[in-house]
Length: 343
Image (cartoon, rainbow, N blue to C red; front, side, top):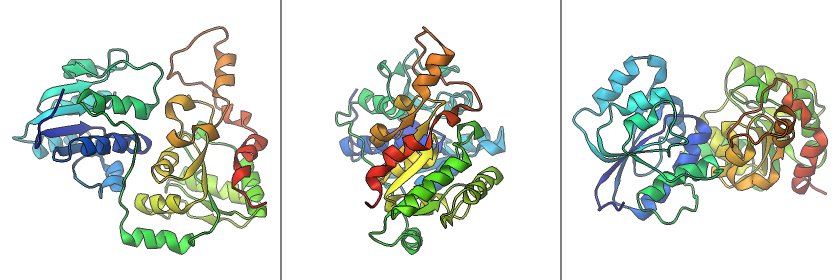
């Protein structure tokens, strides 16, 4: 499929932070190939706060906290509009319901194996099937479907000057800094606070200043307090004290980031910052930090062998259990962090 100049595309990807970071690379690949195409992105309220300064993109916010009113608001926002192409990039029932309020001639979804939760019912074309793709590569399949040939991921997520200055106030130019973003969306995916503390001490003793970053939830702030209690180093605790754009600016200035399977890890990737990802529950080949796959500390393969002996499981299968992250040792993380410390 080829698009003529001045035609329109609607992107439907509501969440989450890591996934919209992957989607930005696809959107900007489309923009490079079709510089005059009009792009409208239906996106979640929280995710919009990170991407609202993205060049050349009109955003329509879908606020899921509004319940059924969110669909009414979407219908009103798009009333009387029709797009040439809808890229339906979210396999979730709420996204497929939302897609019913988006009029488009061509409606592209995932291939048969991935078009779950009724997505195939609301699309009329599909991207090519892919064998064991990273989420980002899966998204790039949408760009390929509409004729984009350069699928190399690149990111340009603008940050307001005030947020850049905020980051500069915390991380001086040339400073060696480790940012730990310790909390994932589910507590079982968090590493142990005493081990984060041990890593903070290791880094601090070798010339890396350590910052803790994360969201404002009680659980994230509690984890940060526990980490501080388990280390001798003086940490800068910014958990709950930054906007998403401020956090993005901080991640850009960091030397290296340590995080489990969580949004800030992928935010750091967009800024070209090295990431040491900690994985036990999800397949890092599918959801790991895209440009730092070689730095991932993963026990996922070990856990899957233990839980499903002599079985070949689907690529996206998640491991089950509340203690799996304890299988990741301090020594494994130190091995990956060693290249960034002062000798």
